[in-house]
Image (cartoon, rainbow, N blue to C red):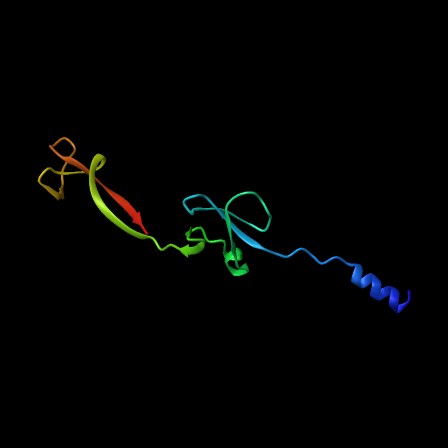
Length: 111
């Protein structure tokens, strides 16, 4: 093979397709899946570092990726299950055969 043939062969090799990293999301901006494929749907382009982490605590707002930090609050709420407490004081636990209100913990999450 001559050098000219080698150069011609080298220039005939097609360029590889560009790599892209995408986060597909729904209409509310919640992530559906991360992909490097071109599939139908709504997506934003992301960088390789974000793609490799693939965080689930994100939302898409104004075509930008926003990471969400969740704040949790736990409260006592009356209900059909839980600890039987005195009707006038939630701090006093009573036997189930006495008049009582059942209280349980409920966790609220917000961002």
